[in-house]
Image 1 (cartoon, rainbow, N blue to C red):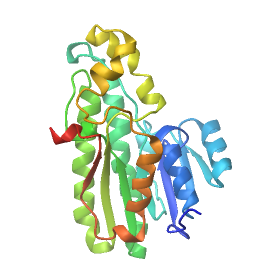
Image 2: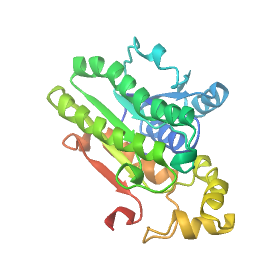
Image 3: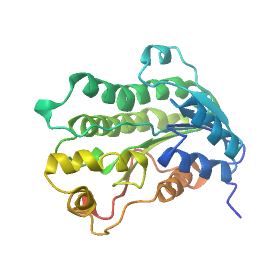
Length: 250
């Protein structure tokens, strides 16, 4: 039987309709939380919410003006939504660079800003930012993604310092490549940029720095998120939890 350690807690998970977000939303629901599945794909959010007994929220995180006056009442906020573009800097589309920074750094800031007042008022809150090993290390051809994740790491630490006196923790989870549609969608671009066959991308690009030669499973990320959201992690804040098979040990 799943632990009910999040009973009576409310959670918002961005990008919650697929991949890591869906795994976290499911695990939170199994642990007793009432989950809002936030996603740009409204139909997918509704389907996931129906599956876990949650609430759908169609939201476009690139439309940041709509988030500036948002008031978000939840116990747990998971900033997970993200996109990717693989391209050398000199060819990187400036509009796509700005879009990635907007969705993966500015929007999380605005959501944290919207959630903190209610968390402070109840003296309890959990902010969990789904970062990446790329929040700690860089890879070629990912200037926007790496910049956004490095920024998210810094914002998470500031949230931890400001939120601590109010009972709010803030942490990052830093997986390597996770078995998700976002990662699968990179394979062709990685093959093109590195001049190799698509069948060689996993071994020669994605897993080359990892001592454990496999992709991270979304459920593994979700299990750590559940712990960080729960009562046993009350003294854990300002941290970055790697789940990268040893990549960042180099």
